[in-house]
Every structure is written in C-alpha cells, then in structure tokens.
Image 1 (tube, rainbow, N blue to C red):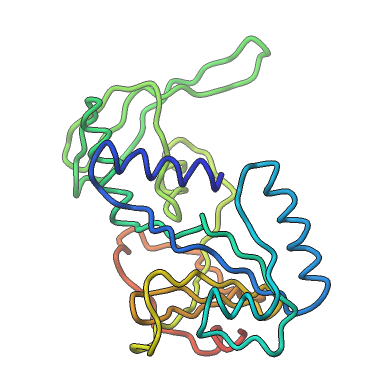
Image 2: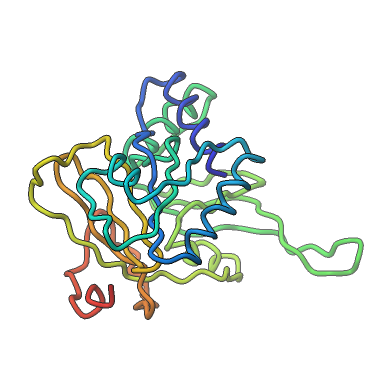
Length: 240
C-alpha cells in the first residue's frame, strides 16, 4: 500500500502538475530491545516488498534527525522513501486527472438521497442495485454505482440505502510548536510506538501528536462539520 500510494502520487504529479507527495522519510524509534527486534523483522520483510529501510544505531539515528536525543534509545529504523501526503494537493491532483478522463465535479452540492431497486439474486438473497442519486441542487444523476469516499461521514450515505458500515470517528489531539532552530521540511517524520507519540515536520516547526490509548469517540459526526478543528482537550493529549 505504501509503494502503491507513493507511486500513484508521483504519477498524478506527472499528469497534472499538482504536487501531493513530500518524500522526507520516516524514522521509527526503538525504546527497548524488543522493539528494535520488531523493526529488524520489518526491515527484512521490506526487502520482499522492495521497500528501502535501514536499521540504525542510536548514533545513526542522531545523524538522520539531529534534533533528537538518543541517549535513552536502543536504535531505530529509517525508511527514506516514506513521506507525507498533502491533503489539498492530492484532492487537486485527483480532480484534474478525473476531469481529463471526462468526470464532472460539483462543489457545494451534497447527496440528498439514493434510489435503489430491491432485487433477489440467484441464491434467493435480497439485494439492492443503485438506480440514481438525488442532490441538494435538485438534480438527479442516473448511475449504477456509487463510490462512498466520505470518510467519517460515510454512514450518512449508507443510511440512505438502509445499510451501515463499521466506521467510528475519534477525536485526535496534536499541537504545533513555534519555530524551532534546526527544524526544516526534509527532516523525517518520527514515530515512537513505545511512548505512543509521533513528530511531523511542519516547515520550520514541529507537529507533536500521539496514539491515544483511550480515544474519545465522536459518535454523532456533524454533517455540516468541515475544514475545522476541535478545541484541544488537554486531558486527551496528556495521555501521551
């Protein structure tokens, strides 16, 4: 999946001129011997999938990311072909490529309902087939297939045809520092699974987040919520 995504972003950039992939590498920190052994296994597995990686000593970790303190770690694994996808860039790239192939894009238009036909298949099971999609603009789009790419809002779409998907949204806490001396966009993203934190480059600043052990679920995803952030919950963030 990593290789496919990386190559797809590069291909889209060639086709559309839109940059979405920032290849700054990924660095995994091992805080104990067991974690380092796990990364050694991942390194060997990566060879099979043609994913470049290197198992590092603490001193080599410091060379890859000079801002890290390494006196309390066992080593790490560095993947130079890892990176970050720019959300705006990938959307623009996909939309440009789709338009070249004849797709139409309608902004500020939502799906209001989906019309389906109730069928019985050869096994005698009841099934449904899409007939058309109705939109908030009053237009009807006749089609046989609907691709549900709405993320956390996915069940708003499946509810329209009486189905549910096993999807729940969670709130995620992170902070962005002020400018840091020595920080730049080509330093690798850092993941420390023993401390359950990650560090991501934000130009000359750093985003710091964690993998919450007791995440806060957002059970009622607001249909109108977009391009916004929650107020930082320090209790959630302090878990890390």
